[in-house]
Image (spheres, rainbow, N blue to C red):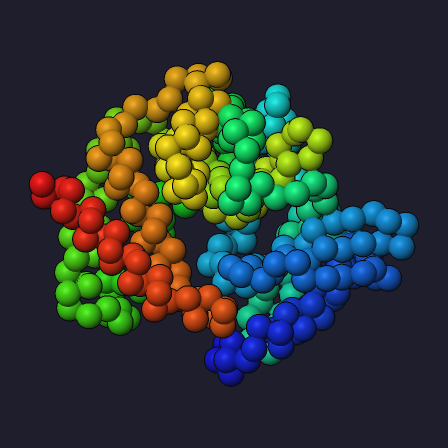
Length: 326
């Protein structure tokens, strides 16, 4: 891998990945198309518009550590979810080789990049200012997915990770030899993670494991003409419904918003059972996963966020430990 490439600006990286996107799209017979990068954060996503007006979304995995087997698992779970009554998702599109996954060498980074072409979703992202109706709808959709996913089975060529550890199988940049934390930060975060892992193990022991979306928040949800559409299954894996719920709640700002999601969930089935302390652990776990990502990422804009994010994270860690210790 070329370290020099990821030292370049975001604009330069996007320009390079846009060329790769065009090469990848040729494998779908999509040559004379308009290609625009609409999101470059963890991965790179491009809008694709044909001359006849057909639209697609191409996601190229850049920072993702997902294997080909994991990507195949994602595709299988997306297609399964599309058949759940009341659930609407973006659908993967096969390339000219009848494969849903396209791979191409990116010379500038020295990486082999994998991509998936999805059908385009109309509407607007729910974002960070969801309405009560949208949150109730989200809660109900989550519950329907949880109910149906108990029956989901992977094919022999697909694999998905199990989310029993605090980092969900990704590389540790907080507590490993790569850690750049101070001694005080390291000690506090390790103490918090010890509690998080104990609570996670307790929840896993008491609940059946099933596939979950793993990233249900407002920026992975579209709203169009009163209907909810779910996308970005890149983080799906084997976990428990509590983890999906915690991730959604993490991104909300008020008790009223939390209550709306829970209200929607209860319209379909009972909520998973958990204590406030267990949910607090899962919420902090999400924060620490995101902090770990900022130490790992090659995205220049995200790397600039690290100092302020670390400071706020330590406030949350210390507050959490104070609550645990009484």
